[in-house]
Image 1: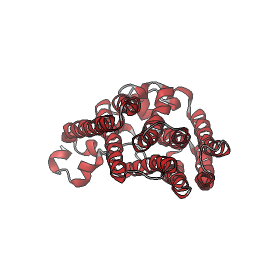
Image 2: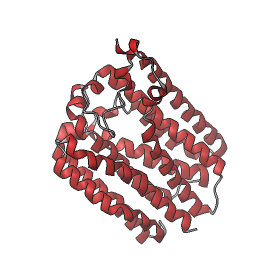
Image 3: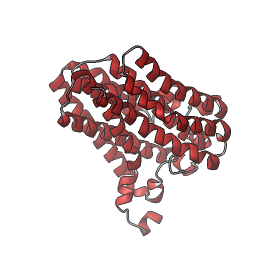
Image 4: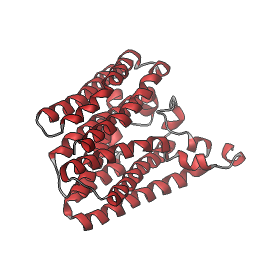
Length: 304
């Protein structure tokens, strides 16, 4: 009834894509480009742009397909919506846009696949394992991975760390490298944490929709402890890689966000059960995901 009274606007058409969250992709692609630049001394900026388009479309596909699925399972009708979690609310306002959400999600996934095929032809078979892993993650995240606690926890990190950072490094640098593997640990831990913390306000809604993530199976307190351990893993992985000379010393710029990480961790540990009090930690968590990979990428570019 509501959708018959108001026509969808541009914000609604962008809503299912969750555009503000797509800012994460430039950070991860920049990190992969930084790895290739530090190793090789130069990169093709055309290929960087193409890799970025593929990464953005992959993320947009997950977002839109997630909105479509959560509408039909009823999850987003029961969430405590915050600026950082709970879905966009687009399909709740405009149920007639469900077909659009499915279509745009599949179209974005198709663009990502096409770019992957181009890079496979241009760069050889090396990119295929990461490309296949990425598409599998995009396709299975909402309907299958969210019902398996461990896979639900690490799938976001695999998509943005392993696939996005290492994939960018491969297409720009020509082969796999320990540099990109070490660098990919930063978004692996951080993006897994991004989705984990965003699930805190939605535990009951996710439970009603048939999901089985870490919080539903093991509880809020366990989730907060895992969140803290993953934050520690972010910075320890950088420090160890620098000590082993896998990453250059300027990579330690990534540690500048440690004070933010401490605040986010304390927020999760103290206010995991209170959505309103958790909001500052949710905001800091987003900043960590944007700033830390960019600082690490800056260290790589400046080290050449």
